[in-house]
Length: 127
Image 1: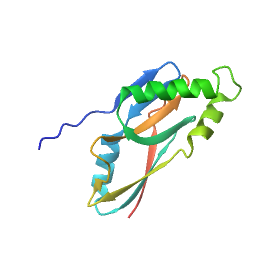
Image 2: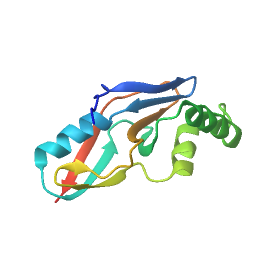
Image 3: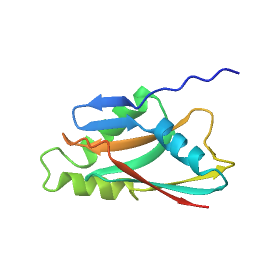
């Protein structure tokens, strides 16, 4: 089996949602630690969060549409309300022998809301 590494890329750039695929960067960092444990991936920017999801374009536009219906664009403190609806900002991903335990199509996404998009994230490894 041949594998191709996808560079950090914009998975979705919609009017009120930006999604960066950071899977390969996280994978490299975890591989350098080796061993087994749990990788805690957290965003550094606000308002943003980390999610593990399949990379499917339709999902991102559906998510943006849902969020617009739940919390209108003109709502005060919209970013805080959207973050609250989507739950914790951090994802915990198990790894074994330096390899992330993700499904075949699962990717790690940094999701940013509104017009703010920071590509900064933090990794904490518990081995």
